[in-house]
Image (tube, rainbow, N blue to C red):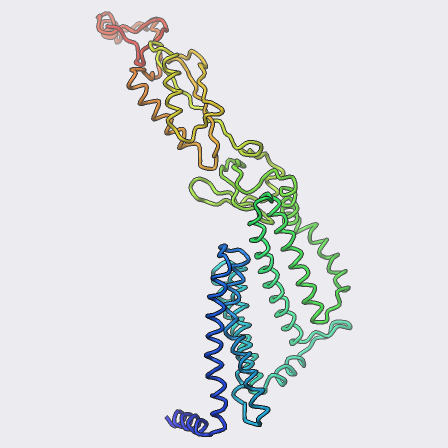
Length: 459
């Protein structure tokens, strides 16, 4: 209670000093002006820009809204501080607000980049907490005057390897710069990739290829810049390059193969997003082309990750490579007692009832063979959207054929087998069987002939 009383007394004493009223006279109008700037800019952007989803204008609007308030407040407070300083009035509170506002703006923009660069999850949440905690910790050390001492202590903890001195401070700086460079590079590459997707005149494979190249170049440049800023000699990476080559020859061979295979798929345009493929008995359409694998989604909504190397070395059926039209064959049997021409006409009419069946190429029916159980017919139809599945079209057409045959009295036969009884073995146990066969109840046919869809027996 004494601590709270002393704090309240200090605040009250600070407020009773007339010199401090001038700082409040700067802070309160600065807060109001920054709020007006934020809402005014937001309204102007909403009126003069088009919301294009995840496009450039949308991202620019969202980015500006996160930093415009702290930056505008900082601007007004800097002006107020200069005025108070010129009048020889105290401005310690304004000096305290400057690093706090800069830190707030930096935290907001970094967290926004993280959320746009990485998928939601525990790792992203941990990254956001690390960014906020790290920045506020540095600002707190700066405000209390401990930052130079902490930097000196971290720099004293050093390890010398040859002619290179590596301290804990330089290691922390390198880690922070590399992380920051990767976040900025991934965010920029994502922004460029979304902008490429808006170009309708650029094919999907070219878009994916350009996005991969841009991402690789940006991350590489960002890493090199981070290493250079810390003071690491880049010529030392010649040895690292040799070690990397040995690693690629052994442990990283498959990863490098998948990475190169991904670029081959993009360049030859054999597989692109939206294609319907079958590989390793997996049927689905290509959702994404990634650096190491492709994402194939089946009709159940299950995503399968297939390595790029598999698509290069194995046989792949691309149902939409040259033409998106896919033919579906529907076999049907009718009884020998029915007219095949009438059945073929009904099958064509049944195909026309499905909205997904194309009129060009037109459906066709073929008489394949005279089978044991009936006449084998085959309906052949074409669809132009294989990614929507073929089983549903087959089901709809089969139901239409069933209804048409039922109305016309056309029979779909059951499987038939003829029994040829030559002789019975001798023995007393077979007398009752011989006697039952001699009675004119049922007699098995001895020849094969056309049936009406049931097992042939004559009384």
